[in-house]
Image 1 (tube, rainbow, N blue to C red):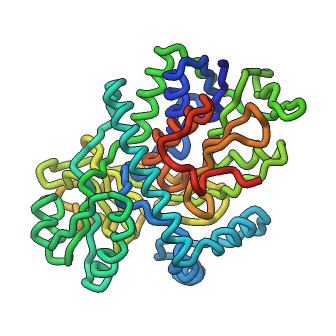
Image 2 (image 1 turned 90 degrees about the horizontal axis):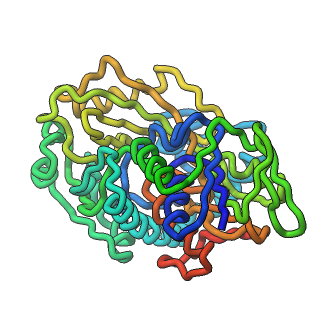
Length: 415
């Protein structure tokens, strides 16, 4: 079957690979001049089933309200004169209760565990290099109250067959000596020993090459303008360079998926949540962190990538702008400097801001659309890198009319 994948981020390219494996003829279209230039370019890099908690939780509304006055919050809300934003906020708030948060976290963790297994399978069969690291991720805490609460909360992940180890201060530093400068500030940590990390941009570029070698056609620099339909089928995609047709289509356009879907009267509950990252050169590998993790009470994620260290922070519900200024990174860099000053060059950071395609639940939509030959694989939010390869396999199984290996509860399109 001829299948057209709309979008060349990590989600779209991973989907292309799985569809190629199933024997389909695949074309990928993207407006950029190469793969992984948007949301997949500079994200946190953590492959983190051990951090698959739902953002829509009972504490989220308080963070958002406080952020109107104090911007140093995990989730920041910048109100806009936007119907789409306020509709999404309403749906998000409905998920911010203990029962929904527990259910969404359980579903996310199952998808993330499966997706990491699929990532490992893809790496084994392709040999792609992406500065990947195994050995787990560390989530450390500075106060006993926060640490104790985290230990309790982690039970939901254990209940979903994810190993979470509780480490004291000495065990934390023994696991990663790169945290030694902060040892006196660490009460304890949670170690997810099967978690990992890597550069999703490098992975996507390398996998796109493998896809091309396997016969996939990539059409870059081609903006999707319109969708033509007849009855309950999509007949063609109109781009800035012409009209293209296939037997089936897969929507993987991230935060822009709702824009195209709206032409088809398909309402996707996706809104952008902005994140910021800074990438720095590691100057002393011996003293740098050896594995990634999160300074939980400083809301700072860090991830070694070869000779670089990626820092990420902030979830900002503020529309579609990816603009930033150096001052947006001041708090992030200050907190990181207290941890890693002796190991990292803070003089020449590379700044980036990107948009996560969030659904109110934090779960992606992986399903057939109301149109018989249009499939949806989008809305992976802050865990798109973690979820991408599992979502791709689920999508390919659905196209092949096979039962996916993971239940899709919460991931179906709800017309």
